[in-house]
Amino acid sequence: MTEKSWDEQRFQDIEYNLKAVREALARAAEDSGRTAADIELMAVTKTVEERFINHAIDCGVTLIGENRVQELLRKKPNLRLAGVRKNLIGHLQTNKVAQIVGEVDMIESVDSLKVAREIGKQSLKKGVVTDVLVEVNIGLEASKTGLSPEETPERIAEMAEIAGLHICGLMSVPPICEDRAKLCKYFENMYNMYVDIGAKKIDNVSMNVLSMGMSGDFAEAVRAGSNHVRVGSRIFGPRVY
Ligand SMILES: *Cc1c(COP(=O)(O)O)cnc(C)c1O
Image 1 (cartoon, rainbow, N blue to C red):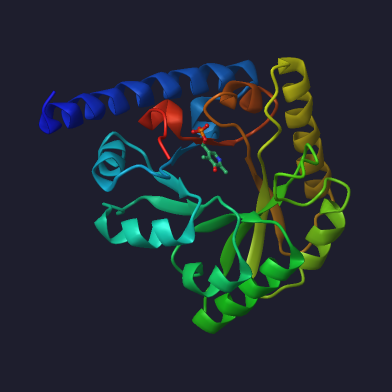
Image 2 (image 1 turned 90 degrees about the vertical axis):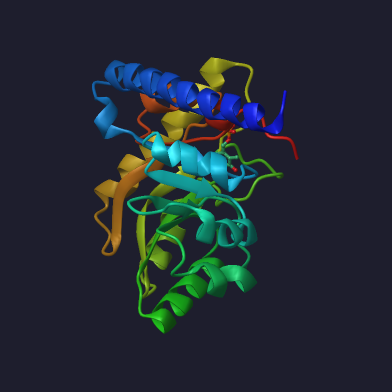
């Protein structure tokens, strides 16, 4: 195929995939007594070139997620972002905080008190309040970032004291599980933690966003109570690193 027709094919695939994901999301929402409007769909755009991201935006995507600060800042000027929010979803190093604060709508991957303090500090400097999610390592995996479930409530209470940031909810990437029942248990544990922390009514903490569910498991996540799914490869096709 020529390069042109390869692009055309990919544009079509993205449109088709988005439609299929939206339909599957709507079914999962209904299974949990909600509607599609209750669940936010994020298109995860890491490694995807700008023309394909812009096509997804033309097809109605209003929220995108990137996992690397540099990649996000590099692509941003080339994206048609009117009416589109962009969130950081990958691990954030303290020394990159100054670059990203004010450039995104939300940081979903706050995984330490140290990075939370730096986000607060840089936000005050820029005169903004940064919305954040606290990332929970629900499977206690050594390979993953995120707070342990055990320490999460206490750390959130500490982060709530930091000026310049607002905690909006929780984010998690559960372990890869062949066993669907086990996977659902992780999602349910996250949902329970989200509800319990919300019930504490901590000042400066609003548990409104529960970000969980990716290409392979968003339906299970939504049935367990997620209201914000992060879908990459099922929209844009497999990533080649
Ligand atoms: C890459 C990524 C996703 C999307 O993964 P897919 O399996 O391609 O849907 C979601 N969340 C995070 C944090 C990611 O890094």
